[in-house]
Image (cartoon, rainbow, N blue to C red; front, top):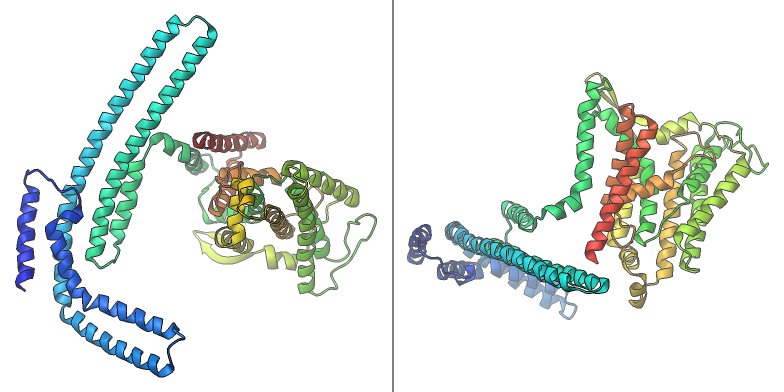
Length: 568
């Protein structure tokens, strides 16, 4: 009891000293003697209490897995450990009040000490940053003055070009040194903050604190914040948010109604549901620095097949002179299975053919998928003569592509689109494949540098074929669902490949490969479809909608290009 009261008195006197204007000479929180005493006292209590309990539980877990021990020996050892745990719990309970008080006093003192310490570090770092900026500006003036003097005495254009190049190089090197030193100042601030949080965690015996974690993230972001980097990373997203905010405000003013309503939101998600399959399939190919121009034709092919199978009664379309057919006598489950499997098989077959040409013959995916697109396009129009398949069975359409009635809100009937469910499933499946499987990690490796990945033992051919086959499966599933949204024909899916690629780019996928996230693709698809829906909702001319979409795409690509140039 005496030691505890002495620590509290010492802490009170030390806090008074910290609040005074005395010079603070501590270089690290770990060097503070009083903080060490608190840590030492807490360690003494925990050694025979909570730490001992954790150690004994680990021993029990190890003994249970140890096959070298006999059953009796293991049983006796576990019983002995449990008896010791009971003793340790009694000790911990007896000293619980003292431990809580010590933790409270230590945290109070540590916070006061840390405020003084981080204040000192931050002030020193800020002063250093001012010095660095002044030195950088002086260096730039020196470089320019020297270059101007040399430029006036240069005899030829070649000498002048050399001087310009040397001036740019010297300026770049000065900026690089300045940024490096500036980053060290930010790192010093973050290190001081991390040291404070680490000390608090040690006092709490490793327990984290949500407020401290949030504070660390916010302040770390502020320490590293650069306006140019922020605009480069978030500029297009901010512009999109401003655009949507303007649409939400303008819509009621021009009589279009409330854009931000549940029916409109569900409609946007329903439109995005099938597009999610196409974008995620194309995203895998983009991830390995490729592209897929055959997507739209595969959607048409799969939709036509699904539409023929699911059409009520005798079909109105013949393919290559064969038919028409009547699949309605088949069982509903068999028809749905056939309508799903055949598009998946055909789309996978054509996609695998494109992948083989790219992986084995080293033909760029742009050319191989363009060839596949033309082949499918010709076969579809020649085989069906461009005729629409017609609507599918209404009962099946409601079963898969219909909506669930949720109720009436503010006088509006709210319905939930069923197509959102498979879209959510494919998102989760793709996230798992990209992030939790060896194949997904190999995708990023091949996309980043195929030659280096091959040297590391990755089968580039297998990865390339895998991603094309996966894309074909996605297109087949998406085309099956597409049949529930529109009357399928050879013209279905026109331009879908460009929309999918654009959504990937807007979502942060790099056309150079190796970078991108599933969440970005999902956000890109929803953003792209929301943009189109908002413009249509506001009765904007269709031709002007193409202008807006084109500007969005070129902005996203330009952002990606600038990032790549900065990395180089």
